[in-house]
Length: 412
Image (cartoon, rainbow, N blue to C red):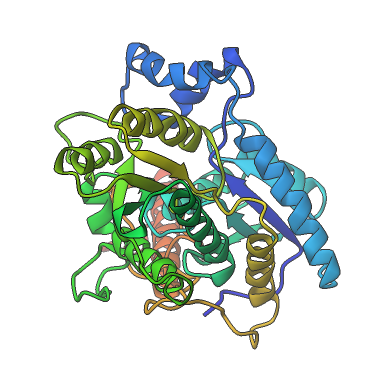
C-alpha cells in the first residue's frame, strides 16, 4: 500500500554527524535533547568522535550515496531532484524543507538511512518531518511521505551475503575451520520498551508475539543471509544477533547481549577460534561502526586471541543503490512489484495504529506519514469540531458583550 504515486522531489534523510571538533558536543546535545544528559557524560561519547578528528564520515558517505542514487535514477529515466536533510546536524531537516518549498516542491518522498522498524529508526524521522513542517507553517502546503523499511530488500542484503562469504573464506585461508568461526550480526541496541513497541497495535510477528518488529526483522534478515551461504559452503558457521552502542541510564533495560560480552564468552568457552562481525543493522560505515566494531570489538577479539573480520556495510554498493531506486519507483508506479525477501514480506508505507509509539500522549502533528489513514480522518474530524466549538464560543462571548443580544442557546 502506498499513500500516493505522485512526487516532485526526494528527501534523503539521515541521522547527521559533526564535521569538526567544535561540532561534537553541540551535535551530541541535539541527539540527547530532552533526556537531561549532562555534558560530562557526553564527553565520554565525544571521545569516539574526537579520536577520528571530530568528524563523522556519515555526511560524506550520504552525499556519495545521493550522487549514486541520482545517477541510477537517471538511467531509469526518473527525473526527481534529491535534497539532503539530517535529524541532528547540518544540513538539518528544516533547512531541506525550506529549500524544497522555495524550489516549488510540495509532495516529497523521503528515503532514510535506517532499514528497520522502530521508534528511533522510523517513527522519529516521521515525527521530525511533521514537526518541522508545522514549525514552518507548511502542514497544509507540503507533504513528506516516508518510504517503507527496506531491511529485507535483496539489494540491501546481497552485499552482506558476499561480505560474510568472503570473510569466512579469508579466515579459512588463514587456517580457521568454518565450524570454528562464529558469525556475529551486530545492530544498535535500543531500550526493551522501544523494541516491544515496534510495530503497530494488533500486529503479530512471525513468532506470534505482540510487537518486537525491530528484533524480528533483524533475525529474519540474518537467517536469509546465512541461508544463501549454504550452496557455496559445505559447513555453514553458527551465528547469533548481538547488540552494540548502548547508551542511556544504567537502570533502563536495553537489548542484549553486548557484542564484547559475546566475544569474551566465546573465548572463555572455547566454542570458536574466530569471529566474523556483520554490522547488519547499519547502512554505512559511520562512527558507531568504526569505533564500536573496528576499534572496541576488534580489540576484545585480539585480547582473547580470536581471529577477527568485519564485513562492510551495504553503503554505496551498486546493488543497494539500485534497491533504493526500486523503492522510489514503487511509489511512482503502484503496479510495480514491491520486492522483498524473508517470511515477513514488504512492510507498508503507512503506519498502523500506534506503530512504534513509545511516548504516550506525545503531541505530534498528524500527517499521512505519521499515522494510519483512519487515524488521520478521526484527527481531522476532531480538529474541525474543536475549531467549530471555538468559533461558537467566541461568537457567544461577542454576543454577551453586545447590549440587547441574547447568546445562541440561552433562554430569553
